[in-house]
Length: 143
Image 1 (tube, one colour):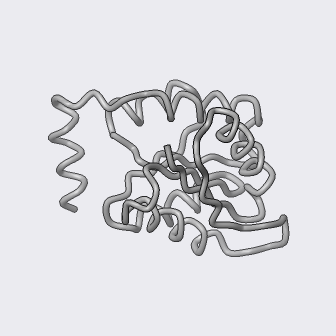
Image 2 (image 1 turned 90 degrees about the vertical axis):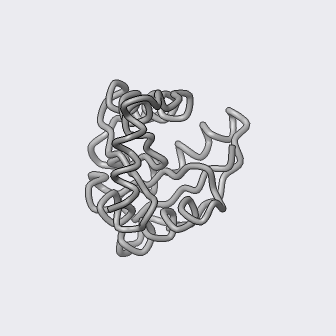
Image 3 (image 1 turned 45 degrees about the horizontal axis):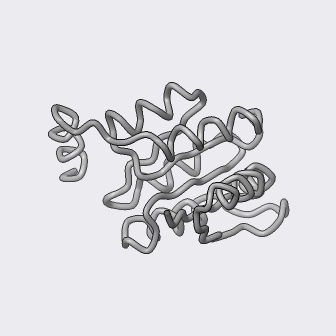
């Protein structure tokens, strides 16, 4: 699977760990920045990653900032994106099963790296259930 990934400075270290994990899984990665822990603006990176997913250049996206909140808001501004900020494995499973989230947001300063990898694994491996959830995701896509 081709995954777009991006972060600001607060999520940079976690983004690098996630990239390593995804490569071990055999996924292909498009890293859209940032490239260091030097201060940058998260909306730029959230938008870039979301546009890659919305355009079909990537199948899914993962974004990280200090808390995951700001960068998830930025990603969700792009039409066609359903970015879930997940702080647990259960949330990652449900955001895929029920919301068909095509992007995952994580907090580099708020999420333990080992937990983050488990969240990413669950997000990547869980399929959308469809059914009654499809009607709801269609409603989101029309907004």
